[in-house]
Amino acid sequence: MSNLAETAPISSAHIPTLKLIDCSLRLCVIPLSVATIWLTVTNQQDNSIYGKLEFSNLTGLKYMVCISGISAGYALVAVVASWVRCLVNKAWLFFVSDQIMAYLMVTSGAAVLEILYLAYKGDRGVSWSEACSSYGRFCSRVNLALALHALALCCFLVLAVISAYRVFSMFEPPVSSKEVEEERAS
Image 1: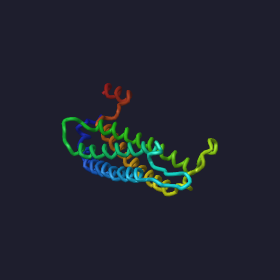
Image 2: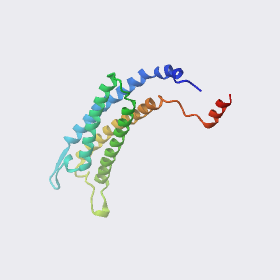
Image 3: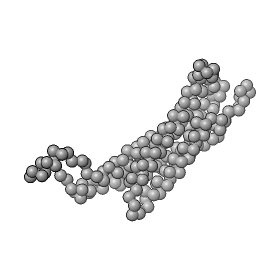
Image 4: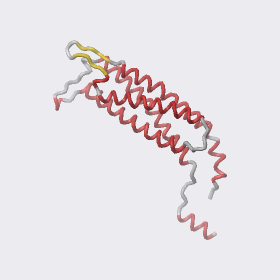
């Protein structure tokens, strides 16, 4: 059975590389989220037949803007916190927070994806026609914002894996009952 002290130098050699990747990904999230917010908030198009369409008309877009703002703020705080030494182990905090952010970004991306699907395809069952032929520029900008949001989501998915590795590498692997019996017998 390995001792935790024996494995500590091996895992601590990876910490600087992981910390660099972690901070880089968190720093990447900030401009991606800010660009998503800017593209979405400034998105509007006027149509002489149907009127003006703005992001504030669609709840899913407002939700994505809120989640993008939260993710940018969290990423900034997390970058600063990762370089500040304190007595508290932040691995669990980052693990839980990264998971929550990834889930929130998935939900907001799904909401916008649903809006885009309806905008491109419509829903004949409830007499909704597609809208992107009338609001093409609006739909294109929402597509771009969704792509940037998806990139930020990918960053958080990798961050969630890194933070999970950090948390669970602090513990020894579980020992099977067979190994315990063999250890007692010897």
